[in-house]
Length: 314
Image (cartoon, rainbow, N blue to C red; front, side, top):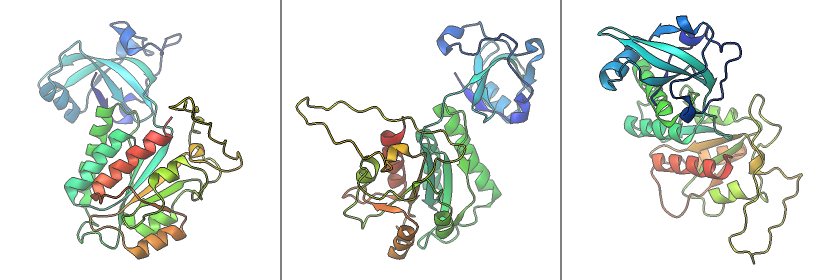
């Protein structure tokens, strides 16, 4: 079913009818839905650009269903009621919880890249579950990228929105303004695990940081205010029954599984300079290796995000 973000004010006055059921599964809905209060009047016109997409691009017809999202974490089931050359009207049926967000909050501080590569990171990062994109200026960032202008910012926002719709997210990732690396370092949340891949690091690996508790893990502290706590991980059964059980970590030692926020710092196309690495370490950032191969910046970003999600998203 197609999903579309719409302006929140378009759905602001909708609420479930008294006694309505909002836990029906997608498969069990069919043509029976829990009505919204005043459902007989819940007929709205879609915004012009969305109406064009529904009518002319996707060629959806009256009677077909879609999901509307207002970035609240909920979704509204709607049916196309009427189409014309100038408008598309939909009947709204049910407000219900949308798909949940990842249990780990990833802030991706990405050194600015050429437009196409940065847009690739926005799209694929959104699909993978990044919560916040923070473009940063590094020493080797290309000149001229620091002021993209309102048109390009709008394009970036549109890429994020379309990727969120495609991947089934109910919340849009946040896109922060471009800022210097030092400012992003100063703004690391006090409870976050901060990681910076660097090709010159040959001792500590990303796997070490994400799977062990015998190393310092940055600025781990109290749970992030307003963030969902991460569910404890269930122990994984050993692959070989004869493998001896692993020792239980000291409960007083913070572990990656107790985190709510991970901040990732990825360099620009020219890489990070040693002075920037030193500065990051002074701010509690863990400098790690991604392996023996040298990766492009966009590859490093997505590989790191995917690894964090694999290990910590439960």
